[in-house]
Image (cartoon, rainbow, N blue to C red; front, side, top):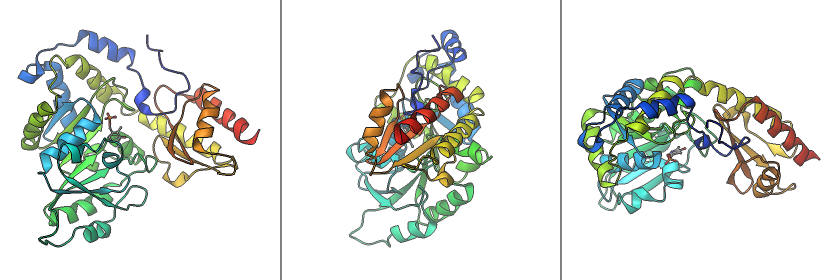
Length: 348
Ligand SMILES: *Cc1c(COP(=O)(O)O)cnc(C)c1O
């Protein structure tokens, strides 16, 4: 039952399946109607999550996308400007929800490895003028998905948060993989999120839970967020069966993310020796490996198809960029098969 995953699936850490311990916890979970505030497992998860990230309160949401959208709705009003890095997941992969449903206008800031400098933010924040939308929120992403899992340090976060606060903006962190970001630099998640007003993180990626994400912040913010979650159809009834897996994820699955990073680096180093592939090893701090394919060899899509014939799954992150993600359901043997196969395909 624990082994339904495809063996060589490097597409994403979202493909992880729940552990035996999670399934047992789900089976035994005490539940109630969470919309009425009566699900003890959900309450336990929300308290534990808030404590883990050092915030007053937390809210269990259906997905990372819903968590980010609830956060934007809670922090802004229609017509506001929301600033974020130019390749932010919220901009790139969330179906334009903040515009369609929140009525806000995104303003993109070019970052470096996903990180925005305080100066770049200052420049983007124009002086008040009758022509301009009102900026009210800055979103930062840690680790940064499209930048190959690159990370923000606590100092970098404090520096942009200060600029945002001077100008009266709130700060939200899309921390889908914030536990990866923390363990990669030996700090706590609390340290990383101390200067942001809200943080979303996913239980369903590297942490291995089947469903769900968390939005955390102060109690007043989370009270309002709870109502927006209901508006978006995210009020779930006996969701304690899902929370039970989330509790196991938070208690037992955060430390092992370091293994995913070690394996990713090992793969990255091996692939950097293949002439038709290139990798920025300095950026490879977490579990996402971005590999550029030499156009003389072919495209990312061609490589993905060649791998698929060998039962290895990978994703494209651009026309010439293939993405491999390590997670709990791929190990040393899978990595060895990936490396050998790539050598054969690229050099053979
Ligand atoms: C995966 C991801 C999300 C969205 O999470 P879902 O649960 O897939 O909706 C948001 N932000 C980042 C950076 C992500 O990687």
